[in-house]
Length: 90
Image (cartoon, rainbow, N blue to C red; front, top):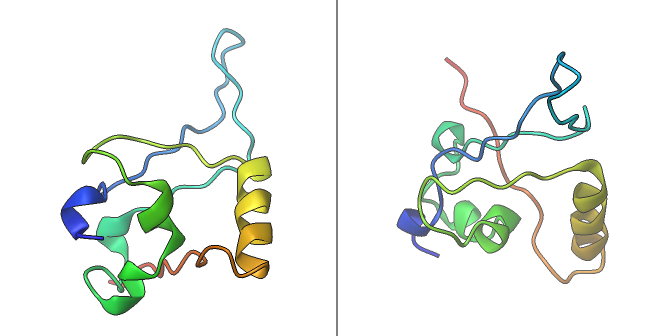
């Protein structure tokens, strides 16, 4: 999948302190493709993010704990590749 189809940042909301704000699982996480050392490599092409984030640039997704478990099960069954994200250092 071309990198243009993958948002450079996949934001995930963090838990709020106000009672009126939605509560997001602390197990939710952020994948920032711009920080990944595998960006624009064959490893990037085989990352599950390429499959679940086939959206317009800057569109966001939230991966909660249940969805992360489902993706792990699909990965273990060999149905989708896993998350290949590795954050750049420095």
